[in-house]
Length: 487
Image 1 (cartoon, one colour):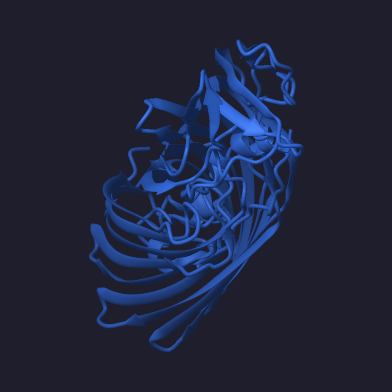
Image 2: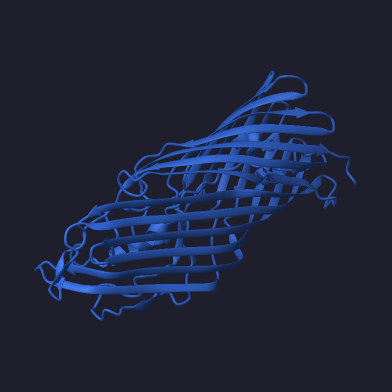
């Protein structure tokens, strides 16, 4: 049982930023303020960061350009001891569009909208391990010895993950005498594909016989959920304070497919008394479409302040994200693999153990950050900010398959500037992100391992750990147009 569950758990240790809540700060000014954006921003992106400031925002239209992203992942021992992986990618991500809605609920209130990309990941990994080792016990068939001496071993895996999540929201805010209050309603639209494939082979090249094990897991998920954010602000001439509350999400619509495949063929082993058993052929498969999903995001509470001192501004912000209890994200309707066992011998596994139900669980997270702004001229301001981006993933055992399990922490550093005239504001930011986490569970273990008693899969069951070196550079450009109100 342990081995079946372990094999199914392997695919979900996938590089991404899916367990991180502060991975991207979209928007012209917010990308430079970072965590302090919770204190309120003087453009319509505040509809996301703190809708309590919306009532003070002048009627303008924010048309933010693209985010140019380059990232690289180096994972030492990712596929077992001394088996290292490397991946790099370049992408162009849409930033944020926000603006006013030309309709008033009351004279002192304001409506706005915001559309932006909240999460993004695109990762592709593969590794091949080949060598000669004595893995299969030798035996005689019809007075002919096979698997004598070293066998040719080949182990390989391929791992892909693509994720995009957009948030679209409508916001209302009211501001009067230094105090503001507002609320935003969001639809979070998530599209995610996870794919993992592992193949192992041990061949007697002299006699043209081989033992094989193959594993494949595939998840394709479209999920829409709803949530709301409430914000309040207070400000005077040189101080701004902000407080926000974000509700947990609720399910709205979904459509998904989920599939898995495990096979092991031609396997022989000797028991503890030296008796030979085999050959064993085992196939388990299940693929289902039109499934419902239930992905969740947690309750959170955020706080920030911005203080002006002469030509400088300083700010600090923090946000606490609550835990998510063990939750079934997607489950096949039949919940079991279809088992084929042509060898006829009783196997120590069954279909009820080989499930592909996929779960979600998250630990509480507390992120924080600060920024410094220096006025260069009346039209040009320079910025620096730092923020944490801690993982919400738990260190799990081998019981379940998880939709996200990225257990490394990120740190983000940003430099940039904003040039502002009466009709337009142009901002540019360069963000460097890094992670240097150690002792993370490896993606898999492709190092060859001899067949032991009751082994039915040619996969190494030894647990290993990897060290991660992650670097990412984001360049973002944003433009805000200040337009006269139409109404």
